[in-house]
Image 1 (spheres, protein in one colour):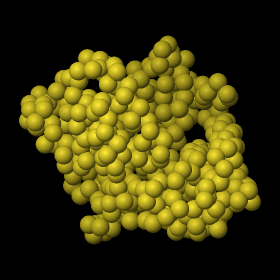
Image 2: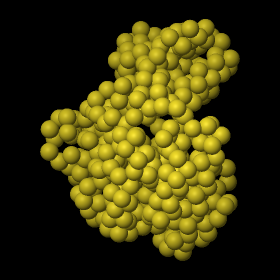
Image 3: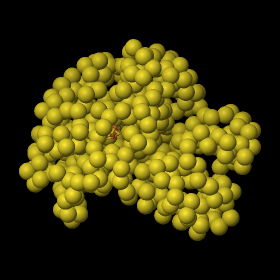
Image 4: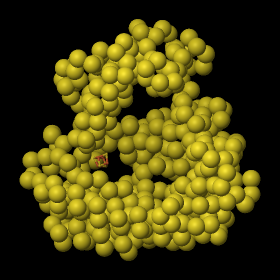
Length: 396
Ligand code: SF4
């Protein structure tokens, strides 16, 4: 979207200086909806004169609250509305040069959408009803977009989607996600590809083997767990059980040494008893997990779980706190394994007087002095503690 807009408009440095402000929204939680409305009020305060428009999943799911806001000038209820809206307010695409090259700020890491929507029936999730069924972006288009990103200077491309493991199932593309990644890896150049998140059942031997043998595929994967208790997984309508999840992670960690595995956990689902919660903690504790992303359950109207009685909010918040604390401990323990060992990394934009780099297994490390961003380097981790991960450059 930013690429579309930049081909017609000049980018303002601050909201106060903009003629047009477009807010893209998320509706995955109740909090995301609320934050979108707060952001709109804040933007209007900062700029009373700009044309302020809102779009994205929250606006699509329920336009009424946005239409009722005096701060908002336009509500774009469908992605297709964006092109017509921009034609009307900002002139034709390409008016200012190259059309549609995505822009992600510091030009080191780009996000490339390969798939949209989801066919799964998770009881708590609003996404299938807002984003529709799974649709894959055609292979040729993904390859072309990938090349365009490399051409403008990105070195790391993160493949994203709602359910990327479903890639190709709707279009009949035989190779699936593995086939797509192989096609991308055939593109010449120095780059790194990162898979974003993959459902436990989609973590096939093919993915593991690709990750083991391809140096240009980052050794990092996010695998949603949601709960470590089978009764809760069943109530959530997830299509695997805890033992299967554990087995998948064990195989991944064994076949891809050093892999950084992340897990999403949904804490406080209505049927989650203290014993169910303990089962989740125990699974996280004994699994080769490096990063834990904990979310507190909140009911989304229109989902099957929304009619179930919730557990007390304070109890859910306390459980989330405990999962996060465990996650922080696991992250530090994971990083500590790499102290003194060389790690391939990509330099990021420096922060103040320090350099930053992201290793292939997703460790965000600090460097003693600012380094030119967007270079592949080798770093050695010197320490991993509560002050963060401190590394030094061993090879440019
Ligand atoms: S697989 Fe993910 S996006 Fe799809 S319904 Fe389940 S939680 Fe939602």
